[in-house]
Length: 258
Image (cartoon, rainbow, N blue to C red; front, side):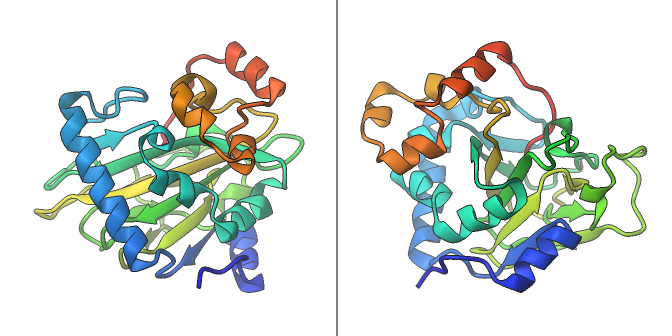
């Protein structure tokens, strides 16, 4: 049975380290279904895959995943995930984007340390949170996420983002694990030095008073929007006039997001 909340220890990890690991969070059936759906989308979209967001050398990207399968829509609203995100952002938040990033085999290009969207906490506190759904095993060699614990509390961006940091850790785990990360934490995807791709889904959330990285109301097909339950419409901010105004003001957002 899926947990409904995270534990007190996991809340402390989010507060102090800036991330917490949920081992084997995805039931096997969900993991298989998500992998199959991603493979089908990648084959269908071909060279256009990820075009709603961006292309990245050395990685396969898929974007706008809310519009591309019920399996994704069920994942973003799992109670324990929402509980963890709410612990970071407060209870008034929304999905900002839902993308896939697959580090390709023998990819020698790792990401610099960064905060997602270049975001720093503001007077209200934290406003970005990222969940990394490990669809393959994350090993030391296949492009895991490196992170520097505690840096979400520094309120500044890394000064030498390409350099190794003495306090950095590698977030490894079995396929089916989910990492919930305060996205103000310094982190970046490592190079994949193996002969197999390393794939993850990234459900990225932001506080309700900030613009979505990908404006869901514009991206989602009318038939997708019409079929959504009220709780998903709220999570996607489809009926929130604040979100419409924010997204109209910010059409394109730069910055790293895995």
